[in-house]
Length: 176
Image (cartoon, rainbow, N blue to C red; front, top):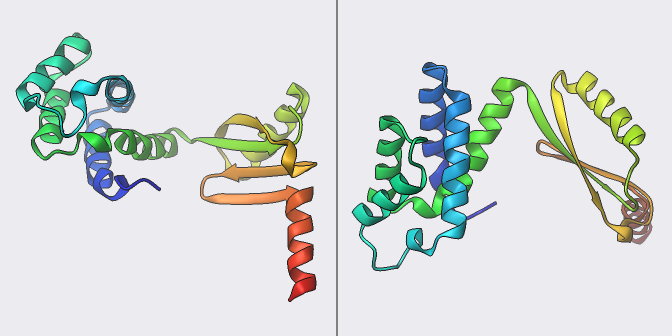
């Protein structure tokens, strides 16, 4: 977890609560995503540089022209004023968790030794959606070091059914 996760939590919660109350969760998700992209590529917004907060705010207003309402502008002002701009990535991450929960959507990462076929991914997706009663976006990562089997990372759980994981558990139990 990032150093900024604790700082980001109240900002993400406040943004989400406001957006939910005003039926604008999609717009705020889009806004925070764009803001995170801008911060990722611009050194102007980095901490410790000589640009003033007003300069940074005007820079963001220019980049996000037409995508920034009054409340989002105020949100950016607060981040700049309290020197919290470094937390934007974590704010987006935590907002997305709240957003996905509201929309009943989840992301599952499947680590396998070889790329899984569409048919295999669809079977896994169907089982997850039945078990968790929500839609899932799957990300298949290939890691040949697991030898075979799967590692499933979903929400705050890791289910390791890989051969390397099973060998590690067996070795641990034999040594204890």
